[in-house]
Length: 210
Length: 211
Image 1 (cartoon, each protein chain N blue to C red):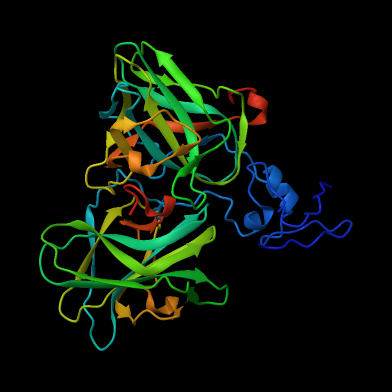
Image 2 (image 1 turned 60 degrees about the horizontal axis):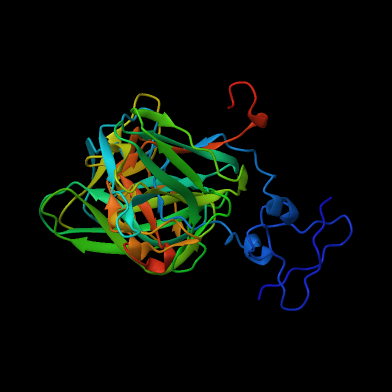
């Protein structure tokens, strides 16, 4: 096991960037980020297709995971997603990380739920248990249909001959989102870039920062 | 100042996620990246240009240098490039470099790879590393070079608008990739094209659809 020296009074343990480990533990040494978009996204994109996530059948459903880089650290408030209009539907969301095991690990407190008879547009479900702090790093946002009757449809951009590896999807095989997510439950890569984002809170959520 | 408790034997200091601080110092506490794309790249950006890397002549060939900014750690397993050729034997070599602050770039050990293939259509190609290499967050340069003595190598690119400088290239002036890369081998002006390339990482230990 790696060893950490005990700090002398007034001498915090420093990492290789010269920052205090205590600060890293609290993740507050970084400026907080307001929004994070999926890797490969840019602001000129428009949605032209839907990722159709199948309704729940025998406990499994359709869903997808999408990669995000959080460079600044976030006070994560919730998620943004552009939903296709249609019949009543619902979905669950959570954030996962790769900690070196064979499964992805859910970030504690990152769960959120969506339920509506949607009109095509942006929805912003907030975290079920309130804001959480995200350290800078690489994350996977999982979205899964939870409706027993109707599919959940996420607006996306078909990426054509650009790099077609925007995330991974499961047509009908994704169980309820739990503490771990097994990649074996996913079907393969999607070439649809989703209209989703991570929504952070900055400056206490005042003024335009809501 | 925040204080850290002294660890007892067999009890590592843990952060808010239950991970050891020792790992945090090594940056392993961050989720590992699966995919990194060049600065300025977008998935929507289908290649509309071809950077034609010249075949090797007298030890020198065409190549290009592509910048990345990793905000996360990554267990690098492969390099990816959009090849625009549709026939003929193609061969490329690739490695990742860091700036040493002294006028040259230094190859990240273990990141060299090479691939030979015969394309029938434009395609994404992977050059796999012998074994995964952990990359810490930071700035990197991916250098791609043609190693065929017969055929050129077409790298897909997306033209940017005027003033947007994304990468560098070498017209037949790049020597074989080694431990040190000299930027003097590059053209003296930067390119307005975003090269279509990526870095691929190992996620969830290659389980499921993760290669």
